[in-house]
Amino acid sequence: MKLLIDDTTGREHGLNANETCVYAAILKCTKAGRGWFANYRDLAAALPFVVSRMTVTRAVEKLFNLGLIERRDNILFAHAQIEHNNAQIEHVDAQNEHDNAQIEQKIAPPNNPLIINENMNETKNATCAQTCDTRTSDLPTFLDLKKEFSSKGGGGMTTHMEMQAVNEWNKCSPAKKFKLLEAVRLGAHFKPRLDWLIADFPEPQPAFLSGQEQDRLSEQGIPLVQVKYNGKFLICTRETMNLFHLEWNMDWLPRRD
Image (cartoon, rainbow, N blue to C red; front, side, top):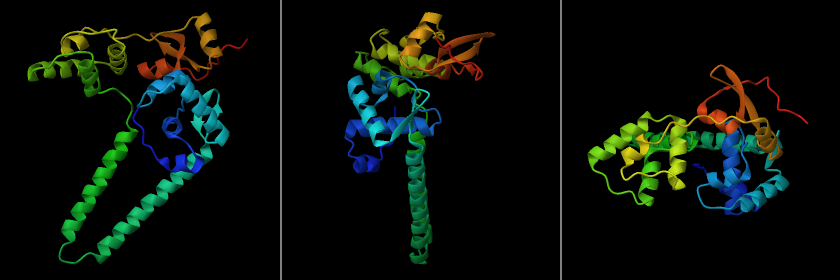
């Protein structure tokens, strides 16, 4: 998960690096409108560095105690007021940047306005690129897979072989990209050539839950949903629904004992 870390909140509340990153991950999911609905183990795995589930558990407890996050139907969200305050700060910063740009334009020497405007545009474009990059989905890239392939002993590639691998990657569904990268990371799938590795990995299918599986996951606090798949209504996790872009039946309610 790519995170945009603003340590202002961390400094104000005495958060360490792990706690700040956990908060940033939950805040990112909150801004995306879904919150964090998976378990703490998956949250630990989603962070851009190695951290244990217990460390994440302690971090979440501290964030709760500080009022930085809240739980809604077993889903973690950044506290609405904190998120609102952050949005106001971002708005103020943007306004200040706009005002400063106007001031610079007014005091600039009249004989070189084009140079200044070009520099300003380059700065704005760079800022926009950074902002957009941090808000994109966490869909794996070809470079992510290539890095894992190399770390597992994959050899060098000719230009033609790499182009073949890129073509195979572009054919993959989002679900296959996620599952393939996970399989390579775990050492469960490997081929001597990257294009073969991609082509030989089967397209994954969504996993649906039996009654016992629903009860077990519900006890763990994992949100379940009912989706429509091949004309049938079936139960799965929200993660599966999002991964395979399944149609959500919002009228369904989980079973209650």
